[in-house]
Image 1 (cartoon, rainbow, N blue to C red):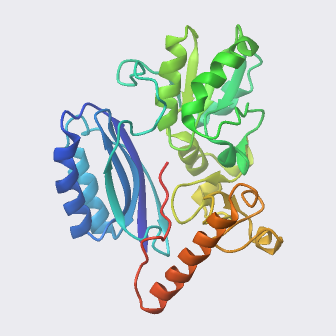
Image 2: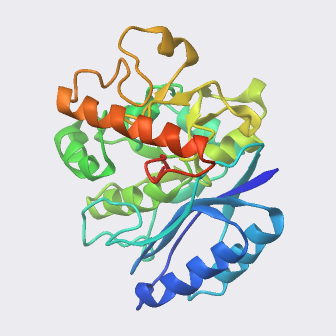
Length: 305
């Protein structure tokens, strides 16, 4: 059994590079794999491993400056969700490209899962999904606005172009685990939106705590690990991953003519050149040879939010 923890914490790290090495060492010692991002604004990532190893890493993170109150979303998997461990330095732990945004200063009003349905059904509330288009495509809350952004960096421009649609509305926002809402709600408050709310713990906590018969969630939730998608109770969903474009696909999508394992799917077949596809085929060949030798090829995919 593998235990999975999705986590983030906005705090001030004066020396992220000094944190990187010791954190990676604790992960390696506990056989914990996944991806953690470090920046001056904090830490973000998803990791998985045996119970003792995961607990050791979480205890180490809680000992870092400003991380004593760290919360995380936990799940289990029968197969290892990640092939290796990466601890990387970044400018932002979730990239929005707005240097004045500071979630440690002020964010929107947190809404508990049991209060979320009533809020988003209010006629004076607009609900906005802050995730990327491929995530929204497989599931979202009923009535939610899809900005159709390909990356979180596009959200500020989308808001500027669409803000008049939401005049005199209260704004409720949500994302997978809550991290993007920390930034997007701070951004909207800076833009003068008087009442901004976000789902505490994100979709994952809602799906974990809300009974399915009372839920306003429709579809599956994309996750950034080997499970690909989860549903109510965080039960693993039916989706797999196109290893060419990193988008979720259903098992039946592999029967479509556009699908070639590791090379293309119906969503990305027209987005890459013949040279790209040839390179992807060579990567697949090398990965297959590595598996025959009992090794993990460096091209094996891992996911970062």
